[in-house]
Structures are given as C-alpha cells and as structure tokens.
Image (tube, rainbow, N blue to C red; front, side):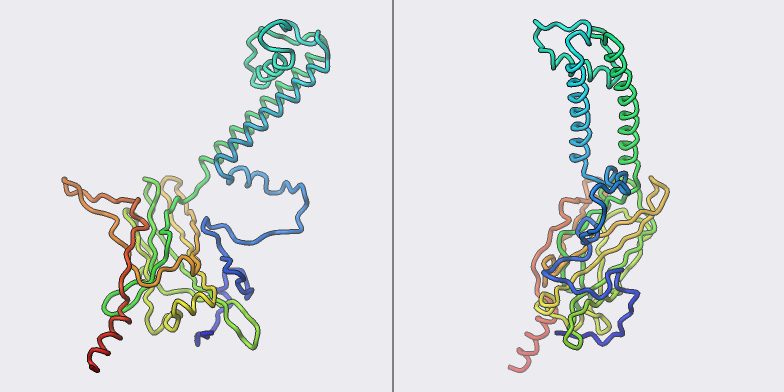
Length: 329
C-alpha cells in the first residue's frame, strides 16, 4: 500500500472523517448526493417533506400528484355513495355510468370547482361534504401550484460531466488526470470555481483509514463557460498521485470528488454542482476527442453528444521506457 509523505490536513476530509471506503462505495454519488444511509429518524418524518417534493424526479412527482388526485376522488365518491341514492340529484342509474362513477366524476367536478351542473348535492349531509371537498380542492391545487413553481424556479446548475476520468498524455512527456464538463442549458455561467479531492484507503498501524488530498489543477477557475471545460491535474513530482499505478488505485479504492461553484445569470445567484469518480470510472491511457468544430460560416459548433468520445493512447512513461530499451540495444 502506497503511503503519501504529505502531511494530512484534517480540513480536507469533506466531512466524512477517516472512515475507509468499503466495496468501492463513493462518498458522493454521481448526482452529487452524499452516499450515506440515515437511520434513527421517526417513521413519519415531516421535517423535509418540502425538500423531497421539490427535488424528487419529475416522473415520480407527476405520479404522486395524479395518485393523490385519484385517491381523493375515490374517497369522496365512496362518501357520496354511503349517503344514499338521494344524496346526489340528477343521477341516471340507467345511463352509461353506474352510481359509483357518477359520484366519482361529480367529486372531480367539485374538487376542481368546475361544476357542470348536471348533478348537484341534495340535503344537509351531501352539501356539507361537497362544501368541504371544494375547500380541500382549493387548498390542494394551491399547494400543487406552489410545488410546481418551486420545482421550476429552484436554482440548480445543469452541468454535464464526462462519464469517465482519464489519465492522458499532458504537455511534454508528462501525464495528466482529466475529465471535462459543459453546461446543459443555454444560459450564461460565470465565475466558475472548481475543487477536486483525491481520497483513498491507507493502512496505518494495522488500521485502515481514509486519506483526502486536494489536487492542484491547471485551471481551477473559468471566467465564463461558453464551451466545454477540460479539467486537468498535472501528475508531477508534487502530486499525491505520482507514485500510484492503476492497480494501486484499485486496491486503495480511490475516489475523486468534484465540487463546482458558479454564478448563474438566469437566477442571479451562486449555484453548486457535485459529482464523483471511482476507480471504476478511470481510464488509464486515453485522451478526449474534440467536441467542437466550425460550420460553413466559420461559427464554432459545440457537440455535447461527443462529451464521452475518447480514444486509447500510449502514455509518455511507457514511450520513454521503450526509448531507453532501444538506446540500450
């Protein structure tokens, strides 16, 4: 196991302490969420309901809204059915719809305050239920509208990261650790600041601990993101990676955490983006193919579909070793 001579800085641990990685589990997931299972909370924990509703996937949110709407109408339809056949005036038992479905669609009209007027409540009980349902409908639609607005207006950076991180030839006879990113939206991102942290398991006095090292970048900030940005760490003599081979990284269950802060002009505020790469995402000896070219008018065309376009190459160290063998011969 490789031990790095640099002094360990406890401020670099990203809040995870010295807990080692087991079974190659990353600290930060690809989507930027922490890979931590939380226990000990109440079964019906309502402290973060709003956060869950505005951050869940769009299809799950749509299914939830539709399910709540369907269940509410079924419940009120059953209540109208329990009040008896005379509770709803204008029902046609011999029509295309049976009693339950007529009550169901009357509930839908009441809940949404549409009220076509074909069926109306009769009696104190039915009118009270209809009045209560209309109030529930007004509050529910107001809540759903607020959640929809919160989901669409929530500041978030839509950054595309390359699927793989690569070790590629860099400058003259050197290696570089690289990945690239681009803006998925058409808005303008300015003042980008990026941090990359390298972490791996290390055995100290017979105990496995986790080490964290911030990596120096060729450029850690960009004034404006108009195209793609290839982030490069020079694997030089001062790099924590200088003594690592691919096999060393695999055995140490290495992880690279990316933290990006950027000012979004559309939201007029700073937004964040996070992701991580494990050793399974690392390609040793590869380079990125260009993502852009020019059209007939000379304008630059950025092709985001080529974000993960790479090709295998021979690293400079291997080429240098071959040259030495040739010189000996």
